[in-house]
Length: 326
Image 1 (tube, rainbow, N blue to C red):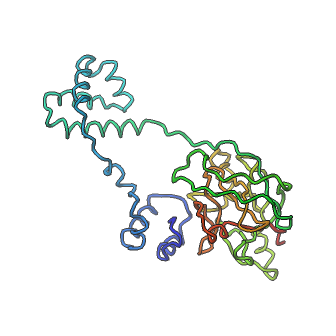
Image 2 (cartoon, rainbow, N blue to C red):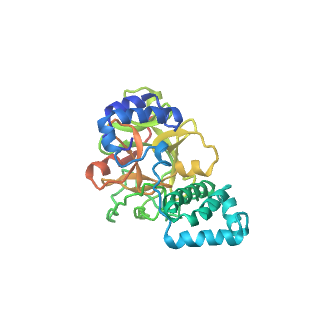
Image 3 (cartoon, rainbow, N blue to C red):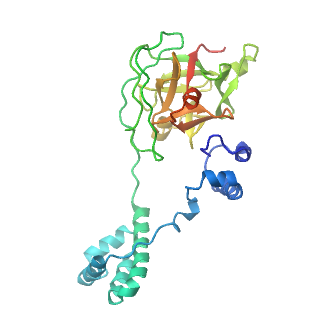
């Protein structure tokens, strides 16, 4: 789905998807990928979710460990403090310790069966170990001038490439210097590389669409967003529509949702201003996925995509802040 340009048949399949992951859509998308040569090529380095467990590699038991583990198990007993604590942490994997103990007398079988035992214990340990929630580091204050303001004299900072996982934002682009007052109140975002197109809402999703002076008042209203201090960082921005919904990303698709009060929502709905491709333009970088920017794709849908060092990408993530269309 992150491929650009995306497979046209996959785009057609996603027409009725609301962007929320589910078992039904995971099955539909997996079926398409299996039958589509283009998607198979794009996803050649990915592992299907249902194949993650089966894809775990077996690791032979080192000779030194094969001798030590049974000795320790015999000393403490299968329910002793050392083995018992490990079994409890692994959610009842004390049987693994007893299996490894019995393998001490069978060194040939220990290489293969012991590998299975260690893999099972590792999976059980991983299942009960809570994964840390990535926290965004404090960001410096940043402001970007309106399109009518004088161009900034400071050079455009180099962009960074985000990791595939939401780690701490250590690869974020350099902050924009404080050269102008912060944005606040209602504004519209006009595309830098498609001047007749504006960021607007379409049902629950954010899109880029042409809006002219002859358009209806209701249509023009969909291009107006109120800039407020970021929900997760007041030095950044959050954008609200007329109904009070916030522009946020969900599975990297840009959509509009009502604030549910969760820390995750606040981070998803916070964007930090960065210099755009041209003078007076700005880009909006994700607060909790540094290096990913709000941009439009060829189908004019708005996504949160990883930074690319190309002129076309920089233009697709650049916008001019203009007066509301109403």
